[in-house]
Image 1 (cartoon, rainbow, N blue to C red):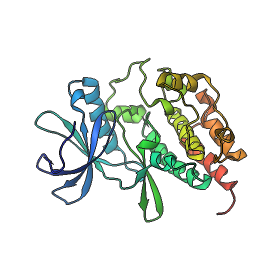
Image 2: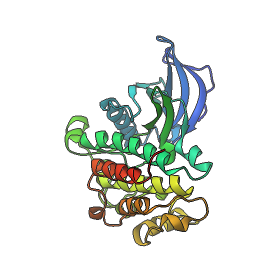
Image 3: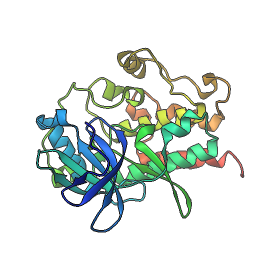
Length: 291
C-alpha cells in the first residue's frame, strides 16, 4: 500500500511523505488543510480491511488514543474513513528519532538511559491507571522529541492495547484476543505473553526491562535465529547480566539489580507497578553520582 505524496484525504489532509509501517497500518506525515498544522496519518493496510478483528483493533486504537492525555503518550485526535472503506487515524506528529535509531549507535550512558526509561514509565503509569496495557512496547514505538525542557519520549502505537477495568467499561468489553493467541514483538515479550497467557501491566514493565538492557548494552538480552526460539528464551532462559553483554556495556550493581528484577520470569517478582519501577529507576540514578 503506497499512497502518493500530495494526495488529499477527505478533502482535509494532504499527505507529505511516508514515515513508516506497522502491524496494522502505514503512517504518513500530512498537513491539516483547515489549520495548517502538521499531523501524522495512519492508514489501515488494505489486506486487513475485511478482517473484523483488525478493524476493531484499529477502532480501539483510535478510542484508546483519544482517551489518553499525557505528555509521554502520543495524542490521537480523529478516526475517519475513505470512500473505499480504508480507515485512518489522525495523530500528533512527533518530530525526532525513535529509540531504535539511538540504540543502533551503541550503548547509551546510564544517566540518559534511565532518564528516557523514566519518561516511558511515567506514560505507562498513566496508561495503566486508566486500565490500559500497551502489549507492544519496543524501541521503534518510543519516539524521542526535543521539548523546552530537553528530551521528551512519546509512546506510540496502541494497536495491541488491552483494556481492563475502567477503560474496558468506557471503550468496550469485547475480547479481541483469545487465550493462547500471541500478540506482540518477540524480542520484548514477557514470558506470560510469549505463552499466550493473560497479561497485565507487569508485561509492559518486563518490556521496559528489555529496552533498558538494550539501551545500556546496545543489544537485547535474548537473540536467536527465529522468533519462536527468542520466545522460548524469554520463558525459560535466565536473563544475562549487563556485564556479560560485552565491551561498551554499562554495568553497576544498582543497574544490574534494576534490570534483573524487571526481567523476572515470574511477574509477581517484578516491580509491582510503574510507580514502583520509577522509584527503582530513581534509586539507581542516585548511585551514579553527579553529572
